[in-house]
Image 1 (cartoon, rainbow, N blue to C red):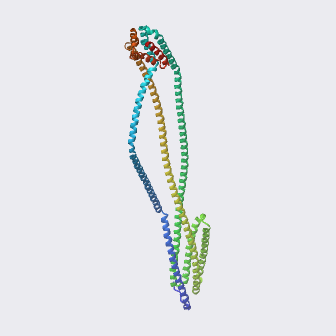
Image 2 (cartoon, rainbow, N blue to C red):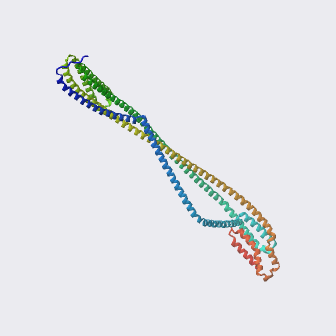
Image 3 (cartoon, rainbow, N blue to C red):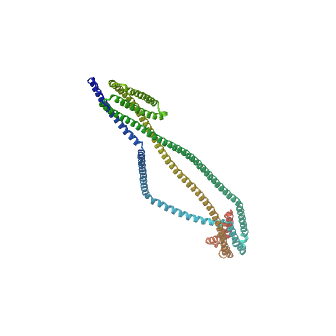
Length: 593
């Protein structure tokens, strides 16, 4: 294409061209400065978005959770160290207590000799008591031999048959005086023995009744003890049942609470994933906006380059067409950007606030203005073919100024729209980040609560198991104690019955042996003890009057004392001691005469 021909007005147009060049250079400098500012802003936003993306990434989440786990492990180690310190402190306290006990024991060793002496004294006292018991048993045995009815019968029968009957047969003078008295005494003794026997026989039902009452009382006590034991056992079972029901109710409530916490944890996880997805979507939209701004910047750079070429070519018509096409392309690019923003706005319209609606209205208005300008530029492009060169120069200058004003207005409006969009995205990302952090914090709290609940549940299970074990041990101990007590009572009753049977058998055996011995001894006393024949021989010699000395009387007294002792032993339980003593004194008096 040929270059335009220079006119005569060229020197007068040089100065405006220079001013225009200066103005263009200043505009280029301002655009360069603004581009640097925007570039710095985009770099900062890119760094911030990269950091936020890194912080919201899965790796950052894993690092945070690993740090949280490490902190928990450190806390557990610290707790275990504290527990070990507490155990060591308890062990040290136990050792100190043991040492104090040993010191007290060593102090008590000084009292061991005194205790040993006391034990020796107790042993001596117990030995003395044993000797006394043996002596008392011997005395009781003698008393039994004296008071036993069978032995009394045997002794009285032997005494009567040996000491009275035979001697009365040999000595008529003694029988004349003592026969009646001895017979009366023996009859009285037999009567008293029969009365004692009747008394014992009559008291036997009373003793049986007392024994039966004692057995009934023991049975009642045993039944009362069994009833009390059964009642306490039922009460313990009721308490255990109530505790089990309460425990089941608490367990049910705890399970419901844990289920709610798990549901809440699931909801929190879903919300966290949703927030993460929304944050990723916002980040992608932000990147799209940044990409659109980058496209506009590149378009601006290409426009600047084309302006430099236009200053060289000065082909106004072609330049006007190219400029119009360039403006149309810029308007079309801005319209596409706004259309993309409108599409994003349509998707977010149901969750946007009033400010976002105003921003959508602004974008719609800006789109409408751009479409009107695009239509106007198309009309202007159609008018360029009818213009002359001078008029084209004038129109070029006018249109260049108008385009500059419009471009600045568009730049300002686009900058406002994009800045508002950036602020909205930034605010939404901050909100999503805070919501996600809150969700993660709540999730961590829920996890901690679940762990605490699990730990508390485990401790409660251990305590319940320990209480159940202790209770079972107590019940087993009580049952074992009751069984042992019943066994001991049964053994004691069997032992008492066995001792009673053995005592009766020994008593019968001893009674039989004593009867045989007394019978045998009575038969021997016929040839050994003969006080009456000795006394009769003294009487046959006429007693030698007054020549009987005191020693002879003492010997006669000692010889005749056997009869008195025998009668006294037979009648000591019958209350005839005074009667026999009276008759014995009368007998001695007659002997002395």
